[in-house]
Image 1: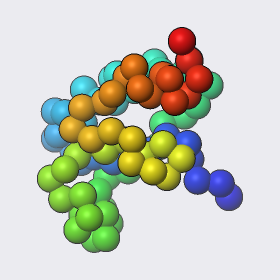
Image 2 (image 1 turned 90 degrees about the vertical axis):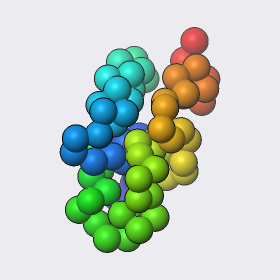
Image 3 (image 1 turned 180 degrees about the vertical axis):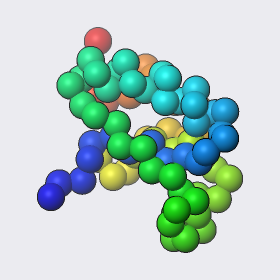
Image 4 (image 1 turned 30 degrees about the vertical axis):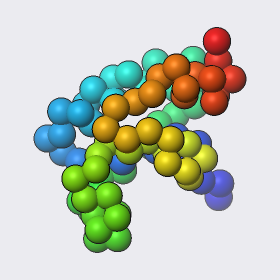
Length: 81
C-alpha cells in the first residue's frame, strides 16, 4: 500500500495543530487528496523524533512544514495555483 501523500503529525490539545489542520484541509480537498492525521503521542518512535516540534506536515513521506503550514509552498508543490 502506498504511503499517504499528506500526513499531519500532531497531538491532542495542540492549538498550532488545529490551525494547521484548518489551513490544510481546503488545500488538500482542492488537490483531491485526503489528509491522514497522526497523533505522535500514540507512537514512541514518533514521540521521540518529533517531541514538541508539532505540527509537522509530511508530503510524500518527507517533511514539508513544521510549526506553521507553508500554504503557498504546499500549493506550488501540489501543482495548484
